[in-house]
Length: 67
Image 1 (cartoon, one colour):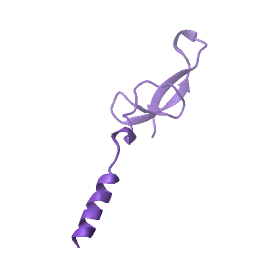
Image 2: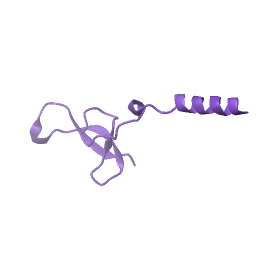
Image 3: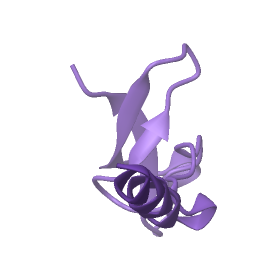
Image 4: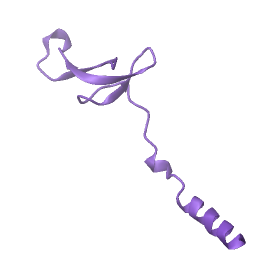
């Protein structure tokens, strides 16, 4: 019985989450379509292409609500 307990504890420790595998919080700055972003009001949004301010020709993105 104690062997099973020790093996179970060892398996649990070996399978613990690696800190590098935890996802980072979504950014408030969009750099690609479809990426998750943090809306200023709090909930998560999604990055979508939008018209650039001032008539710029480059590609611009905006964080919009998912719902």
